[in-house]
Image (cartoon, one colour):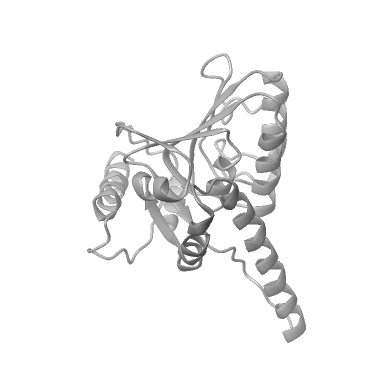
Length: 230
């Protein structure tokens, strides 16, 4: 069944991806969270027509995100993805599946290496590290397809390794995407858990000299407003 609250049919073939990426319905903390099955059903309903995907997601389960990426890549219609606020972690990979990517000036793309919690003996931990490196390779493959110039790959790889929050114009330096005018994004308190997850993806140590500091400060101000209204 289509998740109406996550994949909201705003127009004939317009959908919004506004939560965390999870494995299945049993892993959802919020009605906004999305699983590959939700995407499958939404794309089936669109029936091959062109779709417009609005994205504001902190990321989530990497394998589910890769599944969604592959579903969008295989979709026969044209896919346009717009990062309305944030496409972080595996959500930044998902938008790379679109034929066209749009980013308002005040939106963010966050790229980083795959990570996980692990326990076990030395051999088990080494195996887990090897898996993470293979996942990193898969994510780089997706980014590479949207690179403006192959010569940027080493610089992008360094940005991924450092965990980098890119404003729209910085992202456009790396990727084939369109930067649009800044848009006013209404603050929504939602649940306390959702607010906590938003805070969790905001980097605590952004340097003042970072060219994207004004955008980071805007995010902090909006989170404060969400707390006051909640």
